[in-house]
Image (cartoon, rainbow, N blue to C red; front, side):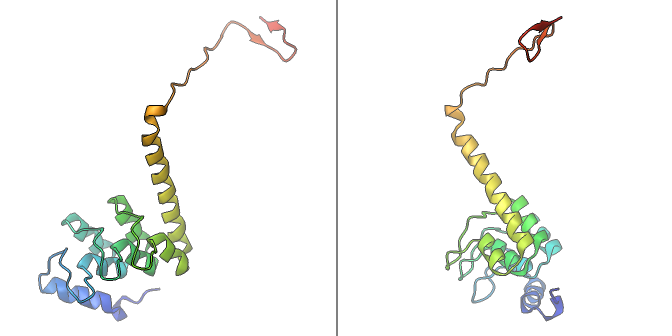
Length: 158
């Protein structure tokens, strides 16, 4: 379990909010905004509030990490769910070429990794459905006959 009192990101976030920092302002040398810190601390309630006040959920820090990467690092399924529900870009890569899904797998957060894999697959299916709409052929349905049915011998029953 993550000990929030010992987490330096949470302490930094508290100081920033007390000082009245903007939700999108990079407050530290690593360019981590308050939304990065909330996601990295697994603070879903604070993250939700920031998203509702206009925080940029795809802002990347000096490491190329977005809040989704931070939530994946700490295994916060709740924060990941919030970010995905707000249309965070799950295919963003950090400077090491890793997506949040890659990070979740690497850190051993299997539930988070499977969640992100499922979302990625769903988005891939949606985008392929949209691109293939012009190529679609209408599906013709067979009419049902209610009067008679053929049995396996090929003879009609009444």
